[in-house]
Image (cartoon, rainbow, N blue to C red; front, side, top):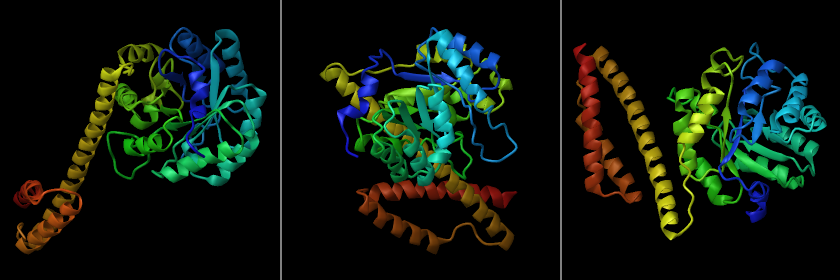
Length: 360
């Protein structure tokens, strides 16, 4: 698959004055819940009403969706509000039912994207469709796997394609439910600049209070739209309660978000500058996360030294680290002076943490 202006023709033809917005509940729970949210979103910037019909959960025992009956509720949404509808599909049976109920936009979830077998089954079922099909990134940070899923759909003569960036799983506990790993999305944009990319701040954040910030970062990085989970009573939602917002809050987010549209040389300069600065901000946050993890290891070393009555400062080890880092820094274009200052500061902070352990 090669980049082409045709990849974004379906989005351009919508002639939107704002980024594409897909919103609605994580799960369709009851008909009244689906309809209440839909009517609350009817006269907003929402372009597609989403609702999970089948919910592939990480572990059994959780709510896994109402099934096919929910598709009838989405049909009613379209009839009463005029909004187009969207849902996730994970196999041929899901595809057949979604097409039978004229769902307008389908997406392949992160747990499905990891399996070429599942993606190929869906691609075969959708071959030649004129529906919009979006592919969420796989749960693990694998750009080739993500692109490969899109290519399978493209090879099935599906023209209206796009991707959804929903973050990546990590064994580390962070402020995010799924690490954004923005650089992976940026790399995809570089390879396919005309492939529409939608951000899913709900799944990245896992917390409703972070949704605005993640959304703004995505728009600063020239994403084409947002998918935000919206519920009339988020705290009592049957799935992913913590990451859903009310329709009222969704409207507030729309009003506050800044969309930077380049229209002249000056605007293009500022848009490019903002994008690069956003990348710097993300890298800085990643540096702090790494430093925090390093200090946790330093504390564990301090505890081990305390238990064995070993001195905090180990000069031979420190000189070995410093020499290796200077060489690796040179390979990365970093001056010896900078590397020395940086690692002396890091070493001093590590000693501080270990001394604190020793005094306990």
